Image 1 (tube, rainbow, N blue to C red):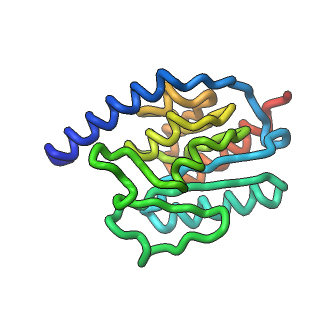
Image 2: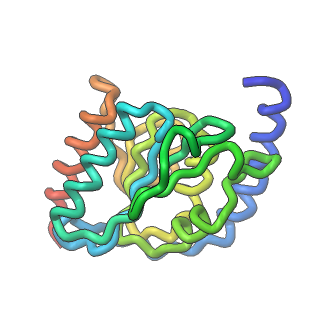
Length: 181
């Protein structure tokens, strides 16, 4: 990370901490069966991982869930990489403020939607995705162990043995089906 990017991220983290103090969440565990709305947050820079997430979202839709997803593409202009389609929203570096805070109506809509479950499929240290996940109004947040997710997610899944998005999705399905409410 460059010196300038480091300063930008520190400023963004300062803003995030300030915003987090205002958040009042009513945490409630949901099973995959009982959840009506599901938000999926992921890093869409790697096209193979993005395709895996797309299949997972299709699975959730087949389970009759209202699914909204947002993916971050770490590029200055993602319009030549992907085109947004229904339920698949993307943002890139052009949607970041000077302090790396994501902005735009798609990001705001995603953060303000009161999901039953927010599934954070980000496996890296990506501040824009951390920002969205932290300030999401979701009732139940799920993600893998590590970095910011340890403090944000209500259900943390440890996949240290096999750090792949495929394995994470399998584990999320498994544990969300185990919840009885």
